Amino acid sequence: MNKHKLQELLDKELNESKDTILGSFVSQLIQRCREQESVPTGIALAASFDLLVGVFYYQKVPNRGWLLCSHGPEQYYFPFVNVCPRCAIETQPFYHKAGKSQSGIIGTATVKALILFIQEWFSQTTNTLRVVKGEEPVDLCIVDEENNTLLLAEVKSSPLLILPLLIVPERTNAEEATHESLTMSTFAGAAMGLMMPTPDGTDWKAITWPFEKRFDDSDSYFVDMVADLLAQDTFFSNYLNSWQRAFTAYSAKDKTDAIFWLTNACGVPSPLPNNWPDRAGSGRETISDGKTSVGLDRTDDIKKGVYQLLKLRMTPINDDYTVKVGIVSNAHAARHHEDYIQPIEHVMWLESEANIAKAGDLPSATPVHNLFDGIITFTQVFTKDDWIKKNFNFNE
Image 1 (cartoon, rainbow, N blue to C red):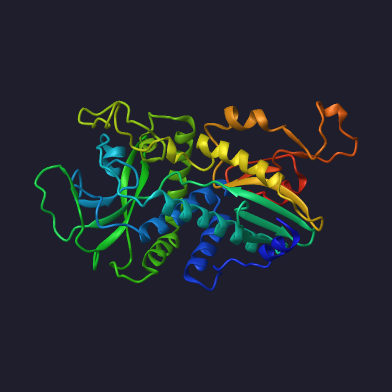
Image 2 (image 1 turned 60 degrees about the vertical axis):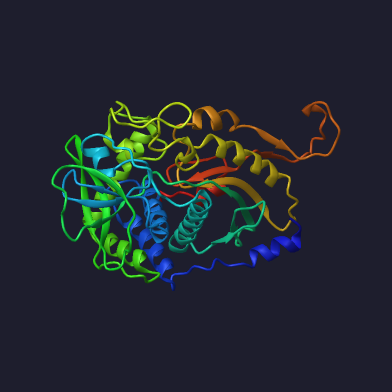
């Protein structure tokens, strides 16, 4: 990346702003995170990231893949993992193949959500940093013009828990508890809402949060409806508490907490229900497999991220800026940090073209860099760099 190419990148601005409906929603999310006191700010940001990704998913929700559940008040659910969301936490898991968007759409949504979040965080907390969407090999660039410093970052992001979308039927037809897969002919005029898993003592209940208006085909419908829910203190506080407990269960692989079965990468239910289907080939179907691990927790993403850090280190940069490199994500590798990241935390990069056999043969002035200056996530930040410590304290 030569000086001209870098300047082209730095001259860019993100398209979203507070003047757009989506930008206003992101601003509202960040503000609520900073005002609330029920959980650490970093946890609130990670949870709210899932709300934003959920809006992107809802906007692309297909007609197929819906599930009628009459184990309780009759509801049509669109789950984002392969299970009936109500039965997973209230009775026992019932397999239903999720009809979520393809991985390419999901990846685009999560990267966009993370960039918007970081941009708005800096907008509300500091005027000295600017966010620019990168170009290969840079996903994201954080610009500190005041200190002539750049962070070139690889983005890896994935949600923990997307609240299931639901439709309340106009009339109840079921005479007994049942499940039925279905395709919706239309969403027009449907009474929609979200299902929130909510603690009920040591158990969980599926609570319906209805949208203020029935479905219309405006581009802003889901943004507007989730923003209305977000404005309700009880919705946001309950959501944050449920999300934090879900993240704790995910991190510890706590299969005794029913909320675990609505988190990504939860695997095969245990104990296994009698009617749980076999997977083609061998084994059993999963509710959600390891490919959907949360934040930076997918091992393939950790390996790819480390390679990208090496690539960024080898990218020629002009001398106008002090350059940092790192990985940015919504959540740290809660399950895999100790095995995959901790062993390389102290690896150093020697900047030399000399043909040498050992480090002792290098000239004393050879530049030395950390492999990564920081792994930056809302839930934890791993760094030895003072600039990153100062600017990425999400718990203020």
